[in-house]
Picture 1 (cartoon, rainbow, N blue to C red):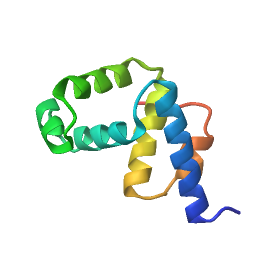
Picture 2 (cartoon, rainbow, N blue to C red):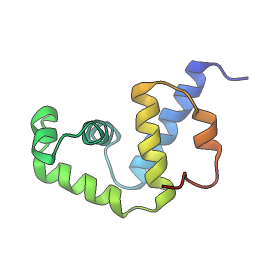
Picture 3 (tube, rainbow, N blue to C red):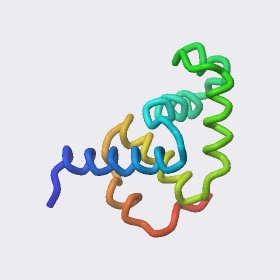
Picture 4 (cartoon, rainbow, N blue to C red):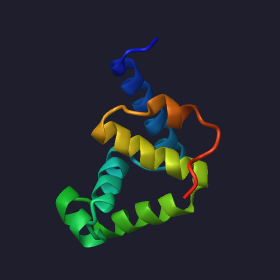
Length: 100
């Protein structure tokens, strides 16, 4: 059975692969998603990260246009990477994303 570090490595690897597949910088995407989920607007995200407001807008627009499964895996992956590894196998082993 994999340990917590191995599970976190797997989540991070899948997150990076998925972000790159959609032409997004995984580090920037992680920061943008985290700040957006915490209620920051585009300008505030740009100011905090040093990424231009236009790039923030592009990333969030591109995120919104990808298929639903990839969207949820990126959102959940960001949360797991930032907040811990709980439910890793559940979310990344599922063939369908959570319903809203």
